[in-house]
Amino acid sequence: MILLACLAGGLISIAAAAALVFRLSRRSTGVLVAFAAGAMLSTAFLDVLPEAFTALPPAAEAAAETGHGAAGREATLFALMLATLFVFFALERLALWRHSHGDCAHHDGHHATTTAPLLILVGDTFHNFIDGILIAAAFIADPLLGVTTTIAIIAHEIPQEMGDFILLRNGGWSNTQAFIANGGSSLSSIFGGILGYFMLASAHEALPYVLVISASSFIYVALADLLPLLHKQGDNFWRQSALIAAGVAVVPLVGWLTH
Image 1 (cartoon, helix red, strand yellow):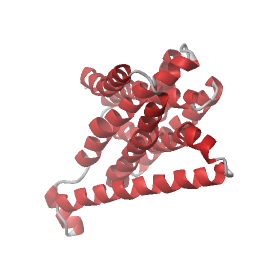
Image 2 (cartoon, rainbow, N blue to C red):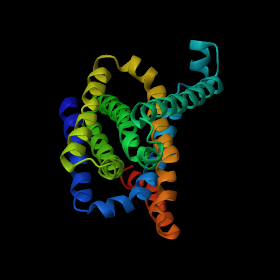
Image 3 (tube, rainbow, N blue to C red):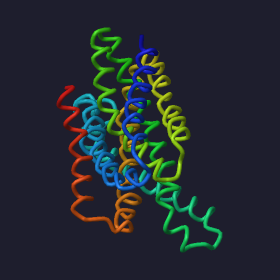
């Protein structure tokens, strides 16, 4: 049941997002980069990071295990987030250096659409892996809870997957390439489900740290790649702001409706 839920959850969310995004023209997809930026930031700050800090053990338990209270564990998560942002910066710089070949002007105008999709797929893979662990934990507790948790995760994933498809299409990827890439990323939920079933205690220990890495990838792509790209587009400020606000609002709205 866990494996079927992980597989179905990933495929349904991807299919729903693709059905919405692939109907749009590439010009429309470029305009919706602002929506993707809002959805990525909202997912990171309003969904993934709160889940990461909630997954930390209580202060007494944390002190007994590590000698540090909850504040020390929270500081560790913030340090991991900072380190992860620098790692993504280094990865992007290396990619830019490898592909520039002296054509700096051309590459500066297109680096956001070539490297951002790859970085966001990394974060999405981590996120889907965590979803698999959560689905496994829910099914172990109660099969009915597992079903409702899977439905809630699908609903949460659709706006995020829409953002992924928007970025991939804006980066020049075909619909088929974008669907295969996102489909491969979604398979990580199956590995999360397997780990959650056999090693639930160990998986829960790692949960906050993997969530922070996932959130960091969304934050980095939104701030370092998407927002600067919006400045270069020269589109109407109010339309961009409205699309960012829509992307920010859709994640907590879906969460409230499926809580």
